[in-house]
Amino acid sequence: MLHIDLPSRTEIEQLAAYRGTPAVSLYLRTTPVTQEAQADRIELKNLLKAAVAQMTDAAVEKRRIWPIEAAVNAIIDDDEFWKFQAHSLAIFATDERTRVFRLPNQLVNTVEVSDRFHIKPLLRSVTFPHHAYVLVIGVGAVHLLEVSADLPPHSVAVPGLPRNFGDALGRRSHVTKEAPGHSGEGASEHALLTRYARTVDQALRGLLKGENAPLFVAATEPMASIFRNASSYPHVATQVIAGAAQETPDHVLADAARGALDQIYAEEIARLAALFATRENEGRATTDVAQAARAATYGAVDTLLVDMDNTVPGRVDDATGAVSFEATPDAVNYGVVDEIARRVLQAGGRVFAVRKADIPRQGDLAAILRYAV
Image (cartoon, rainbow, N blue to C red):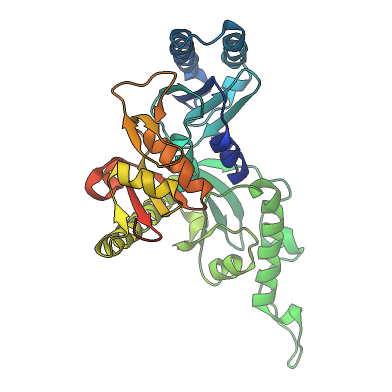
């Protein structure tokens, strides 16, 4: 099972707004397989050494470096922490506070030291879903699966989840034979199945609270439609895994969910690409980093797509948005595209962290503007 700590919008905004030297951002690709976590701990120690070297080269006071070293080393030495991981780890550290997020997506190992945090890879975790749940529900049984990209599906224990329809409603069948003219819930198959769906939904609420992963319903009709209609979870997917799900092996259900996730991603990328093409014809879109930086500084960017992996070192003028590109990263400069993303977020825009292949013209970014700049 993936152990995930997704940042909230407020947490992302707090990280984006931070200013102070040193601000250390570490990204580490991890494994959720506990027995293989030792290599990740060693790699994190290497990333920390690189961060300390950057701070030392920039003449950061040792009294400000030591708390960061101590905080990250405490993470490295925490055996219990490494038993519960996802696919990546993000650490944001200053000499006063350290924040840690376990993320579902696979990120590139990265060290960034500056006067601000490097948040672009973190945005990937809230851009598109990287894992999902599958609710297998029928009259005879109900259970929940968690599905990720490269692990076997995992059956999730849900406190209070009924075993089946009979367990939920205290009766053997959803089909009733009432006298002619009898009305009310007892005579309605739809009403009984709705009660069943609401009981299941109630059990899922505690587990899924704060989640944003899609929940796919695997069921036959009318059960699938009834549950989707009754569910209070805001991320129930429109795609249904149809068929007699109770008789379908979990790995087949997982493959269907992964295919649906890929479809959701592809459809959103296609929609953004079409919007970019339309706005470009109107002079309201660009893939030029310098132009996007000016537009972001003026609050003119509505939607920004950024390459989640690549870093363009440099600086962006606070007043004009003029970009100064630099050859190598250090503890003074920062990621230019990351800074553009920060300004877009602060102006109420949307930022999508994607792969380079999904950006128009496969550049470092693509900006869709509110108005021409």
